[in-house]
Length: 213
Image (cartoon, rainbow, N blue to C red):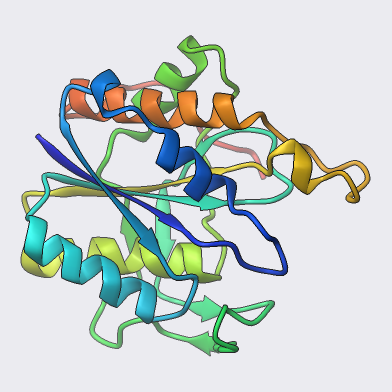
């Protein structure tokens, strides 16, 4: 199995992105698969183009993107990506699309095809907090998740794709009172657990993972 593992560069006035730093530290020897790592620009459309080009050249079995979600306490595999950009802030090249579709010919939404609930259980078994997320937002993270699933549906339908959000690391919240964080080592361990779950599970497990609100 070949897994394309991507992570964004820093954005939103942050000097570091824990997603990227953790992906750099993921040890391929811990995963029973070939791991191809890719840094992605936090830029609308360019992010999709970079990953789609890599998909075409590598022909992976799985594409898993990792992104930062400041304010979250847990590692959160995303359930769904919606066909909508609505940027609260500018991306790294000053783009700020508001209420526009990502692809005119795309579905309203694409669901992750990686085993998100098995991933959550594997992360928790590794001693790291995790839960299913039902919203990837409307910034470049959702944009890329949608673009990955759109590209796979169009060009590589047998492959699986998904997205995982990770919290801030402690150094990012020193001047952000009451903001949660997670140690970089735990984020790395959580990503490795997600990858292990993907390798071990062709289909997701049946377990509660919904939310009331």
